[in-house]
Structure formats: structure tokens, C-alpha cells
Amino acid sequence: MKQRIDKEDIKLFRNSVGKVKPITQDKLLLSTPKQKKKHSAPRNTHTDIDAKFYKFHLRDNDSQIGPNDVLLFKRDGLQNKVLKRLKKGQIPVIAELDLHGHTINKAKLSIDRFILQNQNIHTPGCIRIIHGKGYGSQDATPVIKQYIPGWLQEYPDVLAYCSCPVSDGGTGAVYVLMKRGQNY
Image (tube, rainbow, N blue to C red; front, side, top):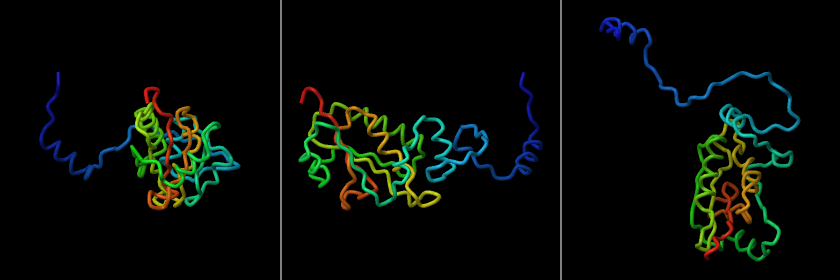
């Protein structure tokens, strides 16, 4: 049986509480003892919390990636001339994902979905992932860019990736060459 709340009690409550801002996330933040790390990723409250939900760790060499550093990877067996074409932007972009404003958790989920959607593509081309240079982050350092190399290399369908030419996002974006579908 519900009790009815008096209108004056409601008014008194609203006046005493004031303006209310809805909570935008539903994660419980637990404090943990701080430990000194030898090589730590850039500090950003949301990204640090989100990183704990995934077991993705930066390798020591990845933790030094700067906003203007070029990302480059090629699987064994891929011809060098194909990588050169990718680096020059000569392979058409057939899909694009923009990660600006994403937390690490949301970026990883978005990349997972994006790669899954573009697996077995039959059209010749590549996909572009815009990760940004981190200028909007707390320390103005790349946060998501730090994770891009490790994440993309996890997918067997990713044959190569490289930073884009300046006209397509420069070092704030990567072209990703995916394995083509079997029916192509």
C-alpha cells in the first residue's frame, strides 16, 4: 500500500535539495591503494576507472606514444607495396569510426563492434579510426591512442594499420586494412 506524500512535503523537499543533476554513469567507484608504477599511462579519472574493466595493459614501448607519433603495423605476408598504398591514402576508406570524447571502455567496445561489422568486407578498401591526439584530455596527452596498437593487433582480420596523411586526420587517425571476405 503506497502512502501519498503531502504536496507541502514535496515542495519543502525540492526547495531544500535545490537543482539536481542526473547521474550520467552507473559505475561504483571504489578507492584502491595507490601504487607507484614504473611506466604509467596519462592520468585521467574516467579512463583509469574504465581501464580496470578491461584487462588491457599498455606495453612499456606503447606508453611513450605522443600526439604526433606515427602508428604503423603490418602482418607477415602482406606485401610492402600494399602497405605503401595504405600509408599514402591510396586505398579507399569504406567505413569510419570517430572515438573523440570516448572513455577507454567505450572506445574498446566501439572498436569491437566496428571491427565485427567490417569483418569479411567484400569491397576493396580500408576503414579509418579517428582516435584523436589527446588535446582534449586532462593532461593534453593521447589516452586512447596509447591503446590502439595493442587493440588492433588482437584482431586476426586486421592485416595492417598506419597513421593517416594530414588530409585524413594525420597522427590522430589510423587507416586499418582488413582481410577481405572469402567470396570476393
